[in-house]
Image 1 (cartoon, helix red, strand yellow):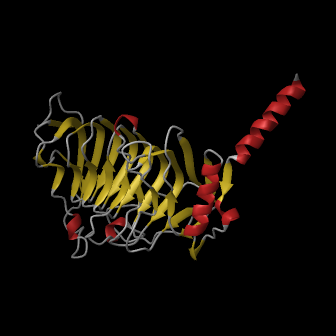
Image 2 (image 1 turned 30 degrees about the horizontal axis):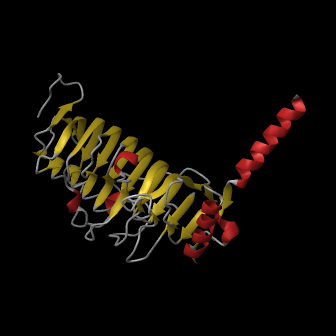
Image 3 (image 1 turned 90 degrees about the vertical axis):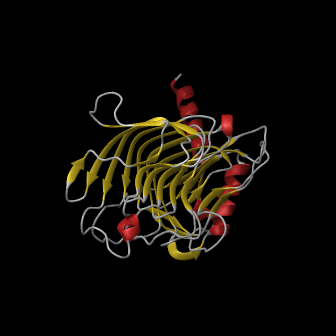
Amino acid sequence: MFTQILACLLACAASIQAATFNATDYGAVGDDKTDNTAAFTKCIEAVIAAGGGRMFLPDGVYQGRIVIPPLGGPSWITVEIVGESEPTPVFGTIGSFPLQNKGTIVKSLETSGSAVISAASGSLYSGFSGVYVVVRNLDVRTYDNPRIGGIDLNYAAQCRLENVVVSTDVYNVQASQPTHATTGLVTPANNNGALTVLRNVLVSGYDTGILVREHTDADHIVVASNIHGIKFSFAHHASRFGRIGTYRNTHHVTVAGKHGFSIGQMNTEQPGAGQTNTHNAWQTLLSDLNDPNNLGTGEINYWVVIGGVGAVDTFTKNGGTGIRARRIGSLLGGSN
């Protein structure tokens, strides 16, 4: 019996090992100068040929793009993109700090085209691809005022992101005003088939931090120094956010389409007197909730802090008649 169990465990271990594909075996080099796009493509193709699996990236700085090619039905597969170590989510509201090139970093300096990580459209149905994308332990970067996005999974069927940082390669307070309408993270829009799970995700420096589509469940999220921190687009199905830290976005939450959602705790800090300069004055808050066309239906529990002042009972709404917002600890009903 013991021999049989041991043989089974060894077989399982071999199977797990066979499903992991090290990008360096396909030519990827984490030296912050080699274009690894072709090597990434070879590795992803190997994962897909195996019916799914894990693309593993050892610690290093990898320039290039990761594009998941289109997949049709009826089979769906899982494609994991996993870094060796969990990134440090460096962000703040004051000061000036250089980002560290530690951990597993994937970045692109391209000025047009797809995001650093993207899923191409497929033939599953309505242009979606039959792929469940998992991204873990990864620091994804572009550059200040980027012309490309960070992670675009619009056409993926489903996704899960865990321990992921998407930034413009500068400490967020130093970010220039985004002028190219790019997005740090785009989630799947695949209607009934969509599923997005986000855990420990930070996005900073884009026009839109996170574009929220269908069936999104998120917790421990930070959006900092974006024009729109979280943007809810049209969705048939509701989204749930646990805790969100929203810092120095022009609009912390924007509603751009009919969407039902709840935010369990929205912790926000606005810059106080003397905490902005001519370079980052655009990060001064215009609205905590920006829903000018009253398209949202939802609830927000908030806690607002002003730098150098402390907690205040001030929550600025632009529209949002269908969204109940109340300060943590307030009586049920709060402010509307």
